[in-house]
Length: 212
Image: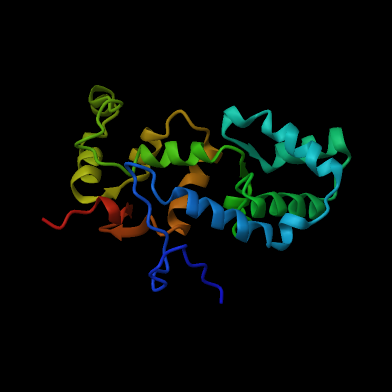
């Protein structure tokens, strides 16, 4: 009874087919998402106006992509007098359930960043997980060679194995806290795994490995 089926004459379908050129099927998918969402417990939960005001303040930094947990604590405490860490975690978990922020509290390294703009994650991951033959515009080979990372870059492109250094190169505009979050996010999402080979700690990205 937990499977929502699409409005189709063929009731054997358990997925929502969407035509990505015409958009056919999107309205049905959207309608069912809204229907199911309205029935979720957290959607109808009464929350403090302080939480809502705190969220508004967090969203003022949406252009930055994320806030650290420490920054959220400062905002919640100094402006809205929400200083209890248990309440802050409850608040962030609630907003995560609503889908307005990304707060992953399962691991300490993931819980230290609260993503207020999910596109930040998409943009960061797509720097590494992509078709390097098609998407080459922002790849500065001269910089890669000057940094002594040509061999590691080729290993990533050809074998789907990445070193910590090449990941940090692609995310060189991010702070260390963000890099730690992104690496852990990839690992926990099974988009990447640790591979210890001949004394080297590498990462394997399955979607980049080749079968030929």
